Length: 156
Image 1: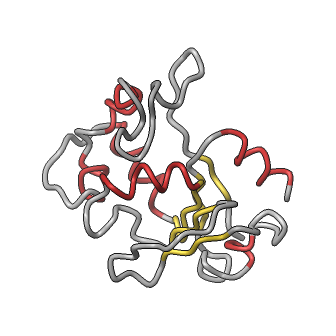
Image 2: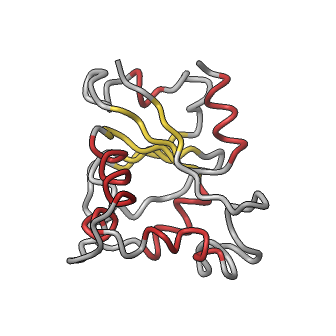
């Protein structure tokens, strides 16, 4: 059976981004400091199509966290901010489901594994139940703000 895990970087005082966050300023002013620990790790760099990096306990944990992921779910804001800065190909290496109430055209960069869902909550975790986690054998990884996470947990 698939597991749904949540991946959220947060400062000790509860912030997940700096002020003035938006597509042209991903994670906001100073928000990258929340994730600074991961940027030099080999497992993270590989997903960014970069070479090298440190291998240590943090790298092992990150590598293990991505090992069985069969799909990623994120909110529209995370997608909008990341779409500009992600490398080509994007770092996910699995289907990505974007949860939004706002339809829009998607620049898929030639990919066939990006899905925009505007009724996801009513469809009860549709990504996981439709086999995007490869028939329940792979996990689903959530990465977004707390309101979306709480709503998805409420769906079961």
